[in-house]
Amino acid sequence: MRYAIKTVPQHTTWQELLDVWRAADELDVFESAWNWDHFYPLSGDFHGPNFEGWIMLAAMAQATSRIRLGVQVTGMIYRHPAVLANMAATLDVISNGRLELGLGAGWNQMECDAYGIELPPLRERFDRFDEGVEAIIALLTEDSATYAGRYVQLTDAWCEPKAVQRPHPPIVIGGKGPTRTLRTAARHAQQWNVITADPAEWPPLKEILVQHCQAIGRDPHEITCSVNVRIGDVGGVGPALDMAARYRELGVDLLIFNLLQPFDPAVLEPLEEGAVALG
Image 1 (cartoon, rainbow, N blue to C red):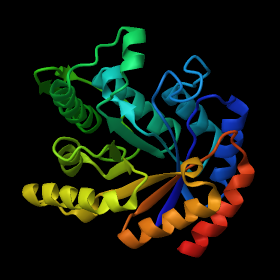
Image 2 (image 1 turned 180 degrees about the vertical axis):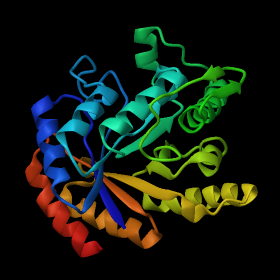
Image 3 (image 1 turned 90 degrees about the vertical axis):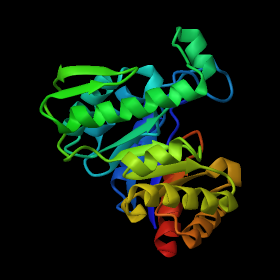
Image 4 (image 1 turned 45 degrees about the vertical axis):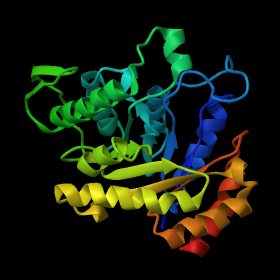
């Protein structure tokens, strides 16, 4: 099993985030570092500070040299897919090919209401998501992209320069909806991510993903399966490592430790030791 970290950029300072990501960059056991795509905190004071995910990622790309970087996951409703494709290509160039392109349909009603962003009904939201993923792939892979969807249209559209990673940065689709999310992951993702506090919930979801892959003739082993463990939810580093061991036994490929706040690089040492011991 491989390992990563995540720092939610709410109720924190830039220096704390920077210190942890730079420290993780120096520890080979952590292959990637993640943040999120929200504009408000999701706990505590909703009016507290929260850094914007993509701008943070661009800065971290310059502050680090090895570790892969991703937003877990980008809400498709917040940015036009063509804009997001250009952002992804640029960030992949800036990071010298270290971007993980996290994508999700979006869900946060509070943020949408506050900013006047339309949050469509669930079916339309996932229709838009499917079209957005396809349009992004077209822009990142084709010299000139034309796409005629119901919600997304491209006409001889360019996205230059292209990303360093070809055919495009790995697409990470987050969520556990059995019908729409997992089907889209089977079609397009190089990584599927789910956040669940119960390991027993994961095997049935993985089986649904496998079934979707079989339906379209795709090898499910082409998709990295990642799971998050929130250290605070399970009671500290020791229980988080115990949870990681359970997911390892279930066949999870990538375990992402969600770090506690206030962020302190010192927590990385016991996580590193525990991860190395787990293998």
